[in-house]
Length: 390
Ligand SMILES: Cc1ncc(COP(=O)(O)O)c(C=O)c1O
Image (tube, rainbow, N blue to C red):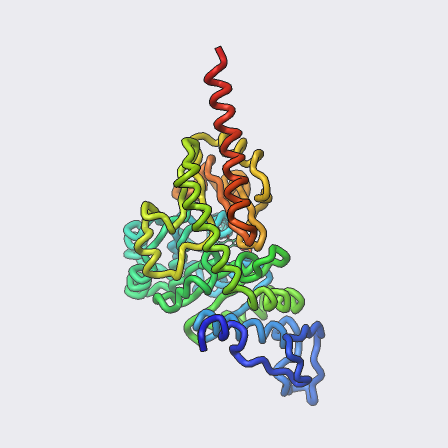
């Protein structure tokens, strides 16, 4: 079955009442015929719920995973993964991680829960892995700098070092990248982004290649009680139905917007980063490991105040944290998603002041280009006003 059909038809939807759309089971408890039994497979909603089970089966199919688990947020998923490591583990991670992930790792280091080494590129990560590690955690493209890492190469190094290899693929979604096929053992998603797609829920996913690891994580999830609630699981499934259409259209629009930004409206005020550009660092590696450039664009302004003024003048794009929604958004990660990252963990991050992240939604790209052109014109006007001031 082809991907768009498979997204809607696999695994086959089964329901005792023959409902044709996924039903929402809110019940916290399930009737047992005897104290030991749970013949329907469910007894208590923290441990399992039919709506969540249907979602997780669909997510596992999408990722090509042995098992997928859904959590209350992306960070809850990461927390569960970190908690499943052996005592006082050594973690190696890419420096261009989402700010909240860096903060979580930083807190764990401060509490002496584990050792952490950050690497900015494959060489630094490999160097760190030579000292042995329990987990290698990376993002590619990174958030927000869109830095690319060679995932096949890192999978080999992690295997040789005996480290579990986990990839946070929130920026791509499984529609564009399937890290398990590239050698990763765990995929992490903030499903708050493209999987949900409508900025109306927070959710996280762990998908794993190995059934035994899946079972270990599921036991921990049950013990910690951070699984996704039934309503959010149902809403997330509804988002999944249109994942392919949304992601492909948003990506096409982002490529069109990028083309305009570097072409007809080339601005002296910022540099444009999008993996569709031939000049994008690591672009060739990205093309080998993903099915497209995605729909996030980073603009690196010459000065941070310029980025702020551009943002103030920018219409249509809502100023919000997060990304991946059907509506276009803009953010200044250094002041927003990465503001709480401890300084020493920010060194290798590309969330510098002056970096503006755009998430392209489903609006007509011509309207988005017009809005960007108008915002840039306000900066040009300022320059010429300054130039003409005696
Ligand atoms: C790449 C990435 N990973 C993980 C997270 C954390 O996910 P959540 O906000 O759903 O906890 C985010 C959130 O922005 C993210 O951008």
